[in-house]
Length: 101
Image (tube, rainbow, N blue to C red; front, side, top):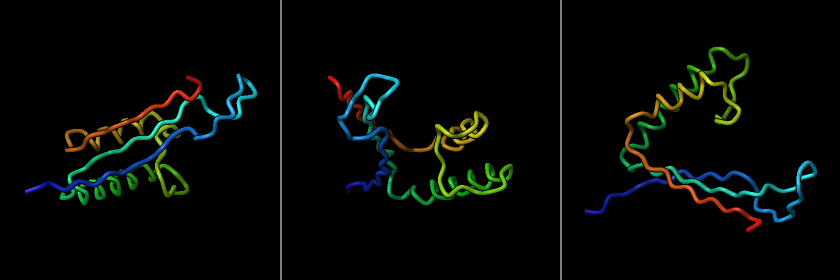
């Protein structure tokens, strides 16, 4: 029997090609697209863990953000996020494109 998976996809950078040297940079030099691939029968576990993670990290904030951005997180939040996912069944695939080349 074939196994089903769910892919959560996100991108970083932009698809624009108006690349100007720093400091007047208009478009990023890199475009990345990543997918976190989870077995279909484990997506509820991931959803529950994310809900728990958000409740832990929002305790120290006045306003709860609707989404988590790793690059904006404090170090302690990053560690908590990675610990929440430790040992879980998932794979990550990333494609990085260096636009100037």
